[in-house]
Length: 295
Image (cartoon, rainbow, N blue to C red; front, side, top):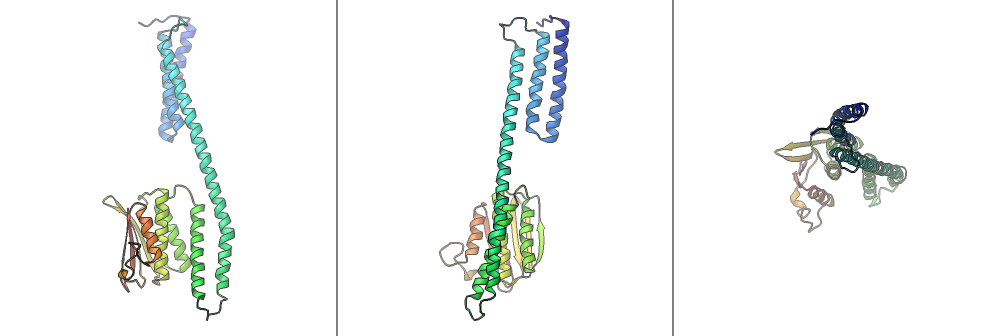
């Protein structure tokens, strides 16, 4: 049975402390729900246990130091929750610091690539124009320089933009850069509700770039449409163009890797399989091309 004894001032102090802990527990619980802060989620139950411990000390004062009271267990549990919350906060802090260091290193590498490699490739591209027109390899050199510039710019963008960007935003930015560079009309229909992790976003961005570049360079397209949607639980990305198109049967080995099929198609198929997903290509001479990825 409860045994309320002891100096009234001591009992009043215990009751006041219990009320303060209850108030703090409720306040931290509300803040945790509002701010989604993990430390606050640990503080709320810790102060609740501390409040129960104080109430128990009021009802059952610890008169004998050799005895272990329930209030002692509740107070110890409160301390343990505070310790766990503090350790979790330290862990999150160091994870955040590590992430910040990685992002800063990626930005530094992006700056180095932009100021070094991109400038040299641009110089090579300019100098290729001075090659005599009678040289059979002039166009191949210029095309190779253009592809290298595109790849370097894609690497700079990938390194310089890190964070929680949506898949739709990443695809739109990649396609917009290419459209502006090659003077292509771009039409986008992107569902921002379609989610993908960082590796998937990168793979889909590279597939989009490859599909747009193929349509512009090989098909002479001047209009590209990109659509991202979810239907029946399947996420679907399609890139269509109004280029000259081609007969897929003329390169029958790209999906089986058994012949000299286009490496760009092989690369897109490999990235689609890694999602994991499936790549489909629909095209015909004079009817443009549609590249579809489902995952």
